[in-house]
Length: 468
Image 1 (cartoon, rainbow, N blue to C red):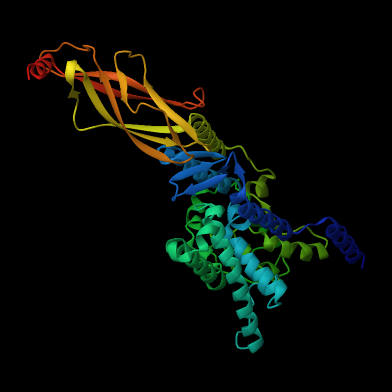
Image 2 (tube, rainbow, N blue to C red):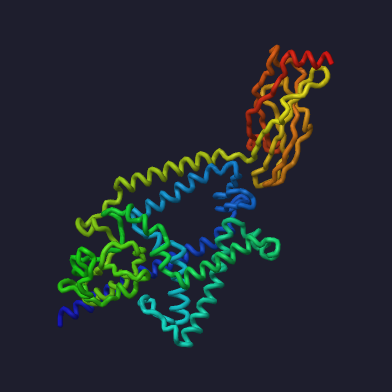
């Protein structure tokens, strides 16, 4: 009887210190959900932390607003996103799927909390057992669960749209749905998709639709941390070809209780080895731990690497990991450098189709079309000047003009000269000029320079004009 007493003591001590992974995941899900819901409402200097506004044609990132002309930053953001996913997968397998993916979070909310905890339709520990849909009681509960999730799906769909339509505009738009049918249509379609996806498609989305599962295998190596069944201790359940030998091995610590299989949300047997369907949720590790503890033994399912299983140590800083870190660092540095050069106003200069106009007394005019845009968060008054050319002056506009935050305006600009800028008998002379535009009220901070050309007519054209 002594070994049993030792097993009891081991389990009691183990249960005192043990925190199941699912509790850690639920806490992590809660934090992610709160951040996702709150972040669209947070502003820095009047701008959002992240907003890709198609309405305003603007990207707002960490409180800085970037106009469409500054969308060259997007490739760096996308590079960082994909490289981070590759880095995370190489390091920790499909940890994103099990711990951060919205699909997983939504399924946990619907399956474990609404159907399981709230309505008592099934146990969290047995995800393989299907609810008897022939019973009226279960039909009613299912309807209630779908209704509750539909309301939450509408909130999730709205939350998603807040990253493209800021909340202050979103709530104003939905009060007048007749004039914002596209927005309402998007919210409704996303809501319906989430209801179908979470209630009926369920984990089949992860198994058959999500492309991440297909690409993860090429990013794995022997040092990738994942859920691993210790077949050396537990015993072989499957042969090398993948065929099942038995639920309980002939030799080994595995007792064949099937707890790890019953709790798996993607319906796999972790004892078979690495599988595309595994999302690193560690539910099977939670199921196995107390069973083994009752026998006075360590968990057969661990979050570790195959290298650690063989040598006892995982090599974290290997070539792939260092390469991803280097690329992420370069992309982030480029993003910071380019973002720090953001202009608080935009200026586009286009010339008119007519090269020049010759007025009385040999005055030569060039006509332009300037597009000014205030990309700052406050209103400013703007004007411009020709840099380093006292012989080329501004004829129009004569006064500075005001632009509200985010607005833009086209200005017809006329530059002229009454000096002889060139003396070419046959050809018109293009003279490079530099235009400096600035905010009159903040000339030190808000200033941009653009290159353009002033065309001066040939001597022959000037002579013909003078003889008329």
